Structures are given as C-alpha cells and as structure tokens.
Length: 454
Image (cartoon, rainbow, N blue to C red; front, side, top):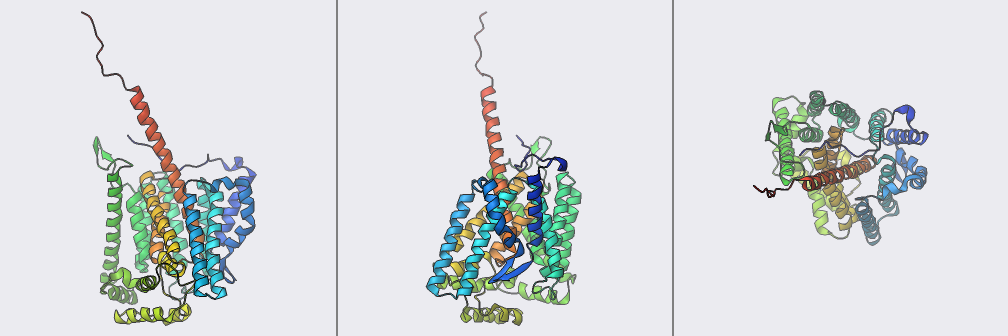
C-alpha cells in the first residue's frame, strides 16, 4: 500500500485571487526575513526583524491566535517556561551582573516571541514559508555587504556568504525536486558540497550530504513486484533511513580527508585538518574543544547554572591548556573577545552551563523533535524536502556543536513551525491509512461457502 503524501497546507490561490490580508501577511514575512540578519544594540545585540515583530505580535494573536494552540506547541511552551525559570534562578543565586541577566532573559523571551509570531504567520502556508526563507537568504547576503559580522575578513565564505548562498541553492534544488527533476536537484546539492569542501567549511558538507541521502530516490521503493525498502511507518524503514544518514556522515568525513590529503584546499586548511585528525578526540572534538570545557562546568554544577554569560577564568585557562596540549591553534582575538566567559560551542551545553538542568531539558527535547522531523521529511518527501532536510540536519548539528546566536533565533523558530507542520501531515497520513484498512476489512467478502442443495 502506498500513499501520495505532502505537507498539509491551505489551498493555493493564484496571485490575483489572493485576499488583501494574505498579501499583507506575505509582505510582513518578506520584511521580517530581509531584516533578520541586521543587528541593533539594545542592552545586547537584537536583530531588526525581532524588533519589527513586537508591534505585530498583538495583531497576529487577535486575528489568528488559535494557530498557536496546536499539538506539540504545549510541550515547547512549558519547557521554554522552565528554561526561563532556570535562567532567572541561576542569575539570582549566582549574583549575575544586571546587564548580563537582562541579556540572558531577553534571549529566551525574544525566542518565544519569534516562535509565536512565525507559528501564526507561516503555519500551513508553504508559499509564505518560501517567501520568508528566500528573504532571509537575501537579507543575510546584504548584511555581509552593509553590516559584516566578526570573522568575515578572515573567512568571508564561512562567516559571510555561505548561509545565504547555500539557502538559495537548496531552495532552487527544491523547485526541481517538486517537479521530480531529481538529477538537477542533486547537481545543485553536489555543487554546494563542492564549494564548501573547497572552502574547508566542513559542517555544511555533512548537512548537504545527509539531506541528499535522505530525500533523493537513491534506492527505489521497489523493482517490479520486489520491494526494496521497508514500508512507510515501520521500524525497518526508520532503520534504513538511519543507516543512510550514518553512511552519508561517514562519506562526508571521508571527503574532508580526501580533500586534505590531495591538497585541494589551502595549505593553512590542510594543516588545520591534519592537526585535528591526529588528536585523540578526533577531528570532531578537535574542532570543538569548548565542549570538553563546558562538560567540566556542567559536572561542577549540574542542576543550577553558572548564570547568564557566566565568566570564570578557570574554564578559559582549561580551554587554553587543552589547545596547547593537543597542538590546536589558539585565536588570541577570540579569547580577548570572550572576556572570560565559560567556553561552550553548543546550544545544549551553553544553556546547561548558564541556566542549569532546566535549560538542558528544553534543548534535549528540541533535539528529539528535530530528529523526528528529519524522519518525517525523509518519509513524506514534501515538495520542499531538500530544503527542509538540509535545514533540520543543520539544526541538529547547531544544537550539539554551535552557539545559540541572536541571528539564529528566527531561523530556528521557523524550523519549529516546519517540524510541527510535518507532524500534522504525518498524522493525516496515518488517519488515511487507518481508514483504508478499516474500509478494506468492512468490504472484504465472506469466506464461508453457501449451502447449495443438489
């Protein structure tokens, strides 16, 4: 039994038939997406897009507030509330400086506002999601030109042009995917992998390769009557998808090693990869030694956090010792900019360090639903499957290995909307399947043989 699956959306209308309210909402999505990558300083750094949401929030809640009340949102809201409580308690008991605790609390509150607004604005509307994502990509490229972030001069691809360029390329790939032009979709993904490999930006190579392995029809469902893949919704199907993801991850690591050994990348990148690959912890932790330090900080205080933007020279010195012992290059400018803040290059670990166990529970739950979302994309294969798979695989990486930055909040709020929409689509598919099974049972002819007299 097979099902034609797609994400649940409201009926698409030609542009001329769109209502004025719908066009206005599209314009809001466009404006917010374009402005997300531009920053203004209010106590801390705040994206312009989040400031624009503040006056819009009451209007959205009055018009369509019911969209926030949906399956899955309750857990997110409760756990985010506990995260905020954990942060406040940690700041009060640790005596955190006023400026730092205001920034720490504001980070959580703005993230909640982002989720609520995008939930109202984008739920079930694939056209508007596409507008927002395209605007976000263009805005990130414009920000590189007009408001470049730290690190752009030293590595313009990684800290500048990569996000917007990859997002646009994967969005175009999704356009080809929608019309089953899988070769064209694959070529764009492979091209982006090649660019990132050449620039030695390794995590997008992993994200793109895993996304391609999960959504492209590499293994056909069946050949004739012979089924090659387990049925949708079975444990066997999940196992196959997990194996594909792990194989793609291993292949990404192999590609990085191949690029390093053949000299495709620059001399400095070669030396960096060779140093990290020779470490006992391997290339992964060689690139993220901060996780070892943040783990030590968590062990020292597993329940109560160290406070918002917690500073302790003991842990920064520990990071320096690890880098020196393993021959990892130390960026003195980064150490000066950190101002003694406890190193934690991870959503999960930095939140655990600063807000305690309550913050860690929130991100552990988000990581779980992200994994579920990846499985839903790989199973349902909606029209934007390459884009959604790439974004969600990247989100899982960021939760484990990237800091929770201010410009990432809006993008991650969008991904939570996508995950909940995918879950709604999955539940709809299950209902259809169950109804088909019930109908088949009801309509099944009787197997008893009627008595026929001679």
